[in-house]
Length: 347
Image (tube, rainbow, N blue to C red; front, side, top):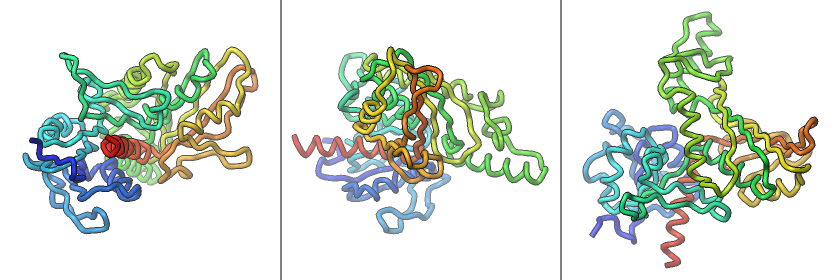
């Protein structure tokens, strides 16, 4: 019998020292997730780091063979390599795996799930070669995938002819290393000193980028391709697929986007707004300021400015929005666990 008892709600966070791992712990606490214990796990270099969980002091533990003993949910929030090496051990211990790194969904080993879209686009189970679904491995898509799929779902009711989304990723999508590089580049440029560019291999500070330097891994092109692939797989023909472009911005947090949709006739803006509200999107009122990277900090939902008709194309509409990239991704992951607990309680 697996050691993860259905009556135990122990939670493990792999990659607890990463930006996503830290945010995930906060979201679990703020949503009062019914965890008996939150176990913080990471690579040996981070083991022993003093932190807190549930208001109590604790240490980040090193990943070991028995790390998942009696764990109900194992969240993988660090690097893809840690997920690949340890997710099967978590499953063998009886834990339900929820992956935030994307590696399991990309290889068809987990079911991607965006709970806010379930009413329109329910998750489609990933299948093994023999046809059995991976019922205890789930993938929580990255923030840009959640944003693009939400745009597609909200616009679908009015049958758009085309959707195009320009996404503006913050440097925190590259974890703490991205934050540190933008900070040092900004300081050095203002001091007329040479800049560091180990992560992006080019100047990010005071700049907009359509590509990174040649030595940057992953490249902006491969990141865009991965987002586009995950969006297509999640929508699976159930909503129109948006064209996607990425432009790297010199901001630390907050995933901004501009989207354009064109319809057969002038769109009913209030109908569009209602469709997005039904998906949990917050839309600013006519007199409210438009959302910004700063205003959405700490907020769990996607936020939109009032939808506008294009001044030259009467059948076209523009959407501007922003989401806290770390909060959006981690809240989605916690909502998966909450949905699974609710289903278990109702069974």
